[in-house]
Amino acid sequence: MSAHVLDYELGAPPGWPSAPDDAVYQGMAGALVGAIAPHTEADPVAVLAQLLAAAGALTRRGAYAVVEATRHHPNEFVVLVGDSAKARKGSSWDHVARLMDRASPGFSLRCATGLSSGEGLIWALRDPDGATGASADPPLLVVEPEFASVLKAAGRDVSSLSPVLRSAWDGRPLALLTRNAPARAAAPHLSVVGHITAHELRHHVSGLEVANGLLNRFCFVACRRARLLPDGGDPDPLKGTYMAERLGAHLRAAGQLGHVRFTTAARVAWWDAYVHLSEPRAGMAGGLLARAEAHVLRLSLIYALVDGAASIGVEHLRAALALWEYCADAVEFFFSDATGDPLAEAISAALCHAPQGMTRTEIRDLLGRNRPAAAIDEALAVLAAAGRARTERVETAGRPAQRWVTTSLPAAGAH
Image (cartoon, rainbow, N blue to C red):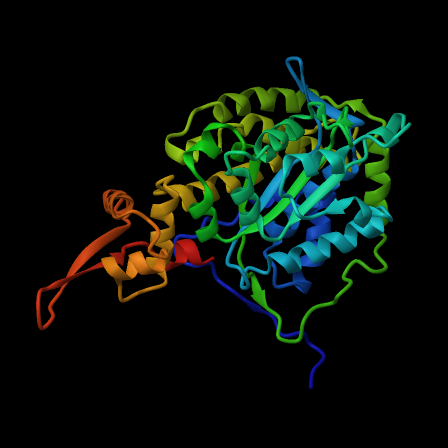
């Protein structure tokens, strides 16, 4: 048998956001993704987004960009949205984790999971006793393969997770004021990578989480299975390239840069981009994209630091803008008809898995018979008004029955 590796490219499902502009794969970030991509079934943009988030975590707070009096450090929150098994989100992270461990030995020691409470997060970010200088702001990268659990925890009335996450993204001081175990993070540097399915995302995202500013601190990246590799790919595609070592050297140097400015040409391009990014968008998608300027600035900074540059060039800004536009397209795709009603989204998800439709009784039973009839009726009315569900008359031996049927395209939630 030939040693040629079988590789079947997969097309995007109907309506899926167009692939990001090639500008996203610029410089060293693009070279790393280009070396990894042929050896994984994961979406290249999934590898890229997580690489940028992880690289931003490793640079700590020694480099930053400034808008007015606000410092933006290279810590980013990224969520991959795709089908649970088919999108290969986990595979994409495995490649990034191996790369980062080689670029910065001990990287895995600053990775964590289990983001369930604000108090626990502050404890994980706390300043080491007696630490000074760089050791006083140890970076933390939280990787959550089940990001739905984070949204559940943040949505609880008594949870402090949402405000702590918001403050950590901003880089504000955090404190845990308990009698037995007080803790303080004077300058937290937190990055987050989450994985979630489209159905879970739509179900758990509520208007409150959008309005309070938690979710617009995340970049949502649509990802899918890019190819089939029946024989697998090279498990270590970067071996012998020394690219990981070069990346590590760039990120270590970045910690000494301080204020990273735009080049003259990039500054002019930023003025034009800023006007466009500041334009408001409508609906829930608009709320999720409300921090466009800040995300593009942080992504531009990370692209520059990955390249080992001391300033943000036009190429870095162009790459960041292209990646953000892809994220914006993903949000519009996933949330164009989102209701913001968790019960309505739960029913919609159930209908998408029941092509034959469901009766009112079947819907009630699915919900455990613990939801008021009026709440179910209201949720069904919301879906009908949004054009995401309709009723069908079913003739029976007795009185005609009524079934609720989804009008949503399966591809919109399946990938």
